[in-house]
Image (tube, rainbow over all chains, first blue to last red; front, side, top):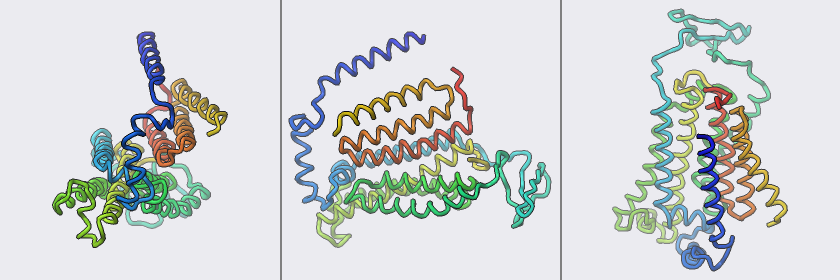
Length: 276
Length: 81
């Protein structure tokens, strides 16, 4: 069976390598893609949308459908992780560990025992808990706000430089995941609960689709942001630029929330009680 | 585009890809995938596709490595085959 798999993989790889020879040369100006559609984007994007970064203009305006469904796919990935991994949180572990902060003594409280809830001297810890590392903790605490600010910059500055909703959203999600790794999962879930992350991931997609629907209601085509100009109070070209920005915000919110949501389910095996 | 640099990075891409399949330790495989993504990110940047390079760096080398580590943490670290 292994030999059969190896032969089929070699065959497929050989065919792929063989066909690569028929591709146009890298950067060939006479290739089919460069002949018709590329000059249109390169010459027209700044005039049409007032966006200097052509990639952003193509991604969110000319090919808005593509990006819309990419965002929906990411939402679907988050929902799939939820349905596969999430288990009922009612099934609590039989024992819980509490740490007395001033002395560092760990208490093991069996099921039915009295838990020191609401006490500031005790904190609940995981079974695979290791003592906090001061350097890691402080570094993450210092770095996280700057990462989040950079993520917002990447989303907002996507018109002028590389970046946009996807990259900015992933960086924002990564900042929250970094906080979860440096502290613990419970504290992060308290800050950004699962319900909020699930609602936000759907909300981001709704922002995107809703922008398209508003365009439709105002008499334009679906995702034709020029139709938004009477609402936004600018001319059609700048309305397209602003429409791209609104849509990128939606993508950023959805991606952030989905990344955090997947991490919650993955790192705690769906229990969201103890985790990395 | 410097072809020597290109060649070195391409060689690293192949080494990381083959290593990720060959290695028995799943945590190591996850880290190798991260290195693979980072090399791909450098290749995209060399080819002038900066937006794609940015996405590869943040998604491929960043978050997906964390997901791999989290999945290994919750399952087993060694492969059966």
